[in-house]
Length: 476
Image (cartoon, rainbow, N blue to C red):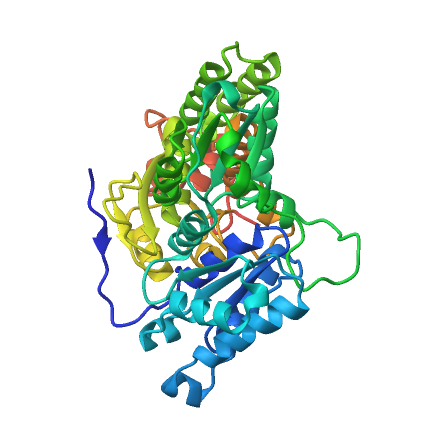
């Protein structure tokens, strides 16, 4: 097991990290008719909203308690109570996610205590689900904030239920990590549907932020996503599928509340991980693998054959959240590529994302390592584009945010079909920067006139062809 290298610089030069607050807000975007409420200054919600709008290109519902200088110093319990009362009365939200930012976490705000005071002061909203999440941005990263929000939803919205194998419905709970795009979730949904199983996601970004036009007018809450029925009916599913190590704590808590089978996967990129999932689903359903899934696998194998000339032995450097990096490392390893370096924004406890050289740092660290290790392909978000241009290396965009490509937020890269797409995309990136044609071969045994002295390849070619070159005697 490798140990990530911690960079201790005085400042972050070109940031890779996205804050925990953003991750927690993203989790609530996948809940139906919900609204995340950021307990902090107005700028916290403004920057978070800008990030999401640039990435998803969709309206993003976020509210804030808008702390000012006085409330920051004297206490902001009143701001939070007033904000929750306003949202409950006017927004029509069925779920409020209260996300504590770094400002109030430093202040020492006790969210559960304030929520209890709110329910005492406004008894008419006693039954309104409110989920508090401590997600300060001075620690963790986006995927850890997302994991904290999912864990908080499990903790506050689920009551222990018995599980009986003979009383389950043909469906599977899916805890999907923040590294999965709406397209990835649709891939999982199609795979489970091939086994005649319904996928119920927590949260469901494929239904909320997949880039669709809303039917009605403007709504101040989320549209689409997981409904509150999930928390009432989760014990009726056959199993829980967890994708992403950042959600393993939430899955463990879910299993404690209802001891059902749990299928854990750190990622679903590449042939091996997808094979293991398909095998697990075949065992779960007690049947054979559907023919269309077998065909998807054969298509991926063909893609591996088509792309191995370009991807084999390639040196790849990547930057992103740990779950995403672990998936891409496995995908490229199956193709014979070598991940020479990976930069992650946060050191997950006891986490080995795969590459031998894993650096906890920023994009400046990635650029230095990519040069030192002679990387040939970069993988990362849109903020890596400048580095790729500077180093004259192809860039495969992945992660968050992607703001310089349309549709990048929903690219599927897991499962057989998604991995196939990822292989083609990586190979095409390399193909675009490759020098086409075959360089002429000059035998070292061919005799060169002594009068020519030291010659270069162009001169050798001209001498073989019996012509002169610019600057030679007799030219022009």
